[in-house]
Every structure is written in structure tokens, then in C-alpha cells.
Image 1 (cartoon, helix red, strand yellow):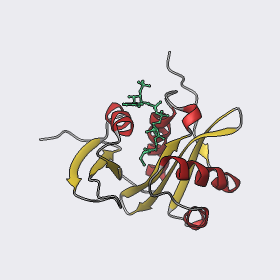
Image 2 (cartoon, helix red, strand yellow):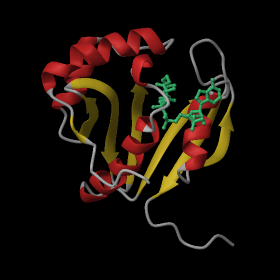
Image 3 (cartoon, protein in one colour):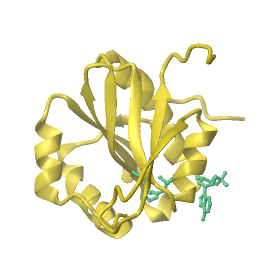
Length: 154
Ligand SMILES: CC(C)(COP(=O)(O)OP(=O)(O)OC[C@H]1O[C@@H](n2cnc3c(N)ncnc32)[C@H](O)[C@@H]1OP(=O)(O)O)[C@@H](O)C(=O)NCCC(=O)NCCS
């Protein structure tokens, strides 16, 4: 039976060091601690967390500009993968971003990032375009989109 409890909470400022460590482990172009602290203090930015026994298991940062909540990054600590946290944090974030005025999420995913693409597909995100050489190593990006209250498509 799916767990109906709310798992997602705000990330604490003191947890940014752990976020920087995870970023450095999992991303080719990680955000460093100073950049994370700058973003965290920006009122248009929100960082969310899922914890297991008090330890940071997954995080998600996004920045709201008008109706768009732009994905900064999300990751699950490799020790806590495939427990549903990656999908869960993005899903619970929709109501939080909506309360900040956003109507949809927009992001970019490396074309090689099959785990993230599968997670997004499962929770109703769409790949709406492909941008050539988006990333620093020349890799293409899929532009990904999730409308919180999706209407009927033509
Ligand atoms: C993508 C990521 C956030 C998923 O986190 P997660 O907590 O494991 O996600 P979930 O448990 O909700 O879903 C995992 C799903 O990913 C997919 N997946 C996981 N490993 C995979 C692999 N090696 N190949 C293909 N798909 C895979 C599966 O669909 C899996 O679902 P399942 O466990 O039911 O089979 C995590 O892998 C991660 O942190 N990756 C590095 C950072 C990143 O790429 N972030 C996204 C770009 S900003």
C-alpha cells in the first residue's frame, strides 16, 4: 500500500554542506557550497528534503519566476536510491511551488540520464524538446515540463 504520509520538508541551511557533497558525487557540473548558500537565501528559491532517520536522503531545489518553477537540481543520496524518494519529492513539491505562484515545472535532463527520465515519465512529466550541446561536455538535454493542473491536449 502506498505511504500516504507527507515525507517532504524544507531543507535546513546546515544541510547545504551535505547537498554540496552529493552534488559533487553525482553531477558532472555540481553547484559548490557558496553557490548553494546564495541560492538558498534567494526568496524565489526553495530547497526541499526527504530524510530517513534524520539523515538527508533526497533534495530538490527550484526557482520560481512568474508561472515557471525552474528546476535547479534534484538528487537522491546513492545510499537511499530506489526507495521512491526521487519521484516523491518532485510530486510533493508541486503543491509547494504552486503556493509560491508557479503553475508548472521546467527543467533539463541529460539524454543519457535514464533513471531520471524514467522517474519523470512515471509522475507525468513530458519531454517537450531537445536542446543540442546543452551541457558542458556537449551532451544534449531533453527539456522537461510538468503542468500542475494539466488540461486536455489537442
Ligand atoms: C534520478 C534520481 C534522482 C532517482 O532517485 P531515486 O530516489 O532512486 O528515485 P525513485 O526511487 O523514485 O525511482 C527510481 C527509478 O529510477 C529508474 N532507475 C533507477 N536506476 C536505473 C538504471 N540504472 N537504469 C534505468 N533506470 C533506472 C527506475 O525506473 C527506478 O524505479 P524502480 O526502482 O521502481 O525500478 C537518482 O538516481 C539520482 O540522484 N541521480 C543522480 C542525480 C540526477 O541525475 N538528478 C536528476 C537531474 S537534475
